[in-house]
Amino acid sequence: MTTVIPTTESEERGFSTSTIVVLVAGLSMLGQFAIATYLPAFSVMAQALHASPTQVQQSLSAYLLPFALMIPWHGAISDAIGRRRMILAGNVLFTIGSLMCAAAPTLSLLYAGRALQGVSAGVGVVIGRAMVRDVFDGTHAQKIMALER
Image (cartoon, rainbow, N blue to C red; front, side):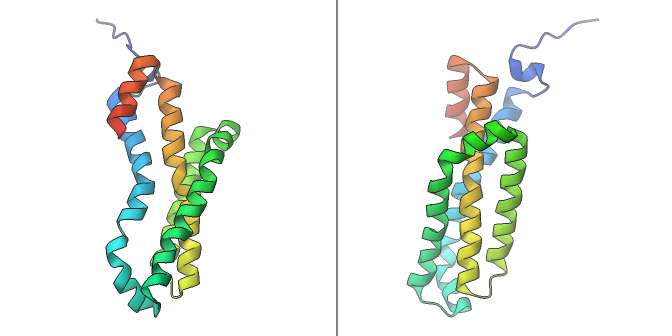
């Protein structure tokens, strides 16, 4: 019988390095995905919501402002309540915001949904990096961070 000795702390916890990389990359991409995917639909959204192109473009600001304001808070909150809870809460809020945006019959509901997405999208970026620092040390952590970009 052979004994497998874990080589990293992540393997001691039952996660392979590739699992951590995929998880952190997925969490980090959520915020950027929410920006890039709806930009081509601005003209269709303007028609559907009976709004001007400028009003629809302001939904990007409704997302980015809460995103920027919450980034410093995500790490502190996750330290207080735990990384797992914060990731789950962030993903639930992001999903609710996405559903609000998809079903928005008015421009103000679209803005509210985008703001909720912005509040929660930074969770993946901040906590993903914190998870890497929790599990890996030194140059190994730097290599993992480089892989997720």
